[in-house]
Length: 269
Ligand code: KIV
Image (cartoon, rainbow, N blue to C red; front, side, top):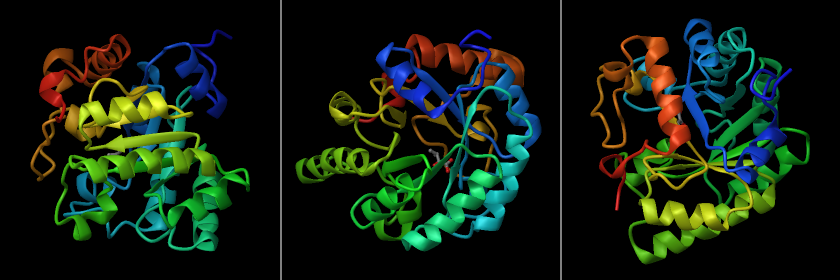
């Protein structure tokens, strides 16, 4: 089986980075869209707790439960042949390491290959606990949507020197604790470039400029759907150029791989 046809594994992420192949990731919440994304070249699918906003219609990700995540993870897993499936630990499912282990185990048993959790600091202990128990971990840093109340909205992070230094340290710390992948959301492009250069593990950007090792978008956003929320600057409507859902996914994958997305107009300074 060619490397493009066989299922992607966690070690393949580091390999892609080493070989300079950018990783294209999208969110998915059901088998049908997962199948279309998978068949059209998406490397990683994320069952994001963004499902609380784009599927369930809430104003934030906070109401999403582990049951919700396990249900949607199982749906998406049934639509995938090649893509690596990442699934979010929802709000407070990672508040203690025991809760995180229970929740992450459910997500892996539902078909995920990796559990994603937001933050560093007190979460480092959780990242390490999971990684040491054979749960591949993706850390999510920068604009962490589960921190929306503390942040006072969905705001770009790391613009001040002290905040930028903290983010650089957090990225190294989560990798040292065992994270195999880092999602960087809503950070200035130059800072994301520095973090990516220093990081021992691949980075995936969303609103983090073009210099990450890969990119992720929420599926509904890249299909131009109105999910009832202000569309952030980093979103591009790929349906407009792709002409169909499959075409949009192909256009997105091609643009991530050749580095034409995100462009400067999708990035923060
Ligand atoms: O929940 C989600 O969809 C995410 C992405 C925005 C990275 O965490």
